[in-house]
Image 1 (cartoon, rainbow, N blue to C red):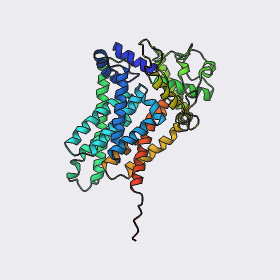
Image 2: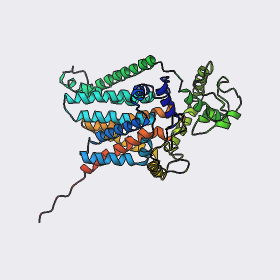
Image 3: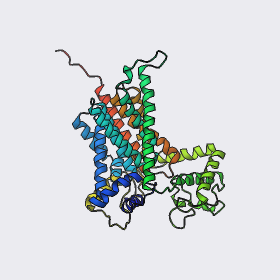
Image 4: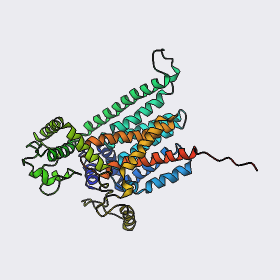
Length: 434
């Protein structure tokens, strides 16, 4: 449990919520925490169950039950997955809930009505929770909503005759599903916006972390302090250079004597920071894209090793949380850290770019060439994660492996499905006649 985890637990305990973390999941957790003493251990159990069930349902698209269970166990034990499954935080929750959403959709495609409707309803609830885990999950959730809309519309749209000037039945279904999925996504976003307003979540302007990283990077490249004086009173390049780190902007707001107050910046500082960020991008558009590309390449472990491959301990806290089963925990840590170094930089198995390519292959093959809903649903999980990855390209304020947990899982599940399909389609030798 990191400082972020403990901050979320503090919100659950006090009821004072902000929009920095998974606000609505905290709201849902609070009554269980207060009245049933459902602490972090229960959340850990829940996220593990959700991940195993979701992965199993996705793999059942092509595997028999025992095989799907075995492959699920293997995926759970792959070090980049194993290390993150023990972390309590919204990066894990987002990934777990997204996999569960698509697992439920896969299950819905394999049963008939009215059972299909029940599974679709469960998938819609899981999609709602997925968006509650991360505010930037809208594109990924939209893919799930489009699938759900398509399944619903497919029951009757092809039966309705279309005027000759309109597209074919298949394309009518695709366009209608996209429109319906977007409408459904807007509905989910609307309910969550209203829910945040009802609980009175404080807006802490988390986008300011991204503004700080981009302005610092562009300032270093242009050798000009592009920060507003309201946010960074120290002028010139001395403060910018002193705290610059290509992997993170955290030095500017945390640690001893940080030069920028911890966001949200109050008064004129916040709006001025946003305005200077916009001006910097407008004045240096190509340099801005190069800054983002540089961070992305570091993020996916192309230009450097994967960073902080897992959270190895429970941070100091006033609640008395500590590791109970120390021997088992030590063995688990030794297993994960065997694939990294003392600084928790990842080894070869943490080559994020490889999982990205696997997810891309699954998206292309399963969506483009599938002839039914089942494989399209599996491929759409990869598409959803890739859309989320595209959002990270422009929004990530640091390079850390936890951001890449969704692409690792989607790559592994997609690769397993592709391998099973390839095995099933292999040429078989006919027995020779005696």
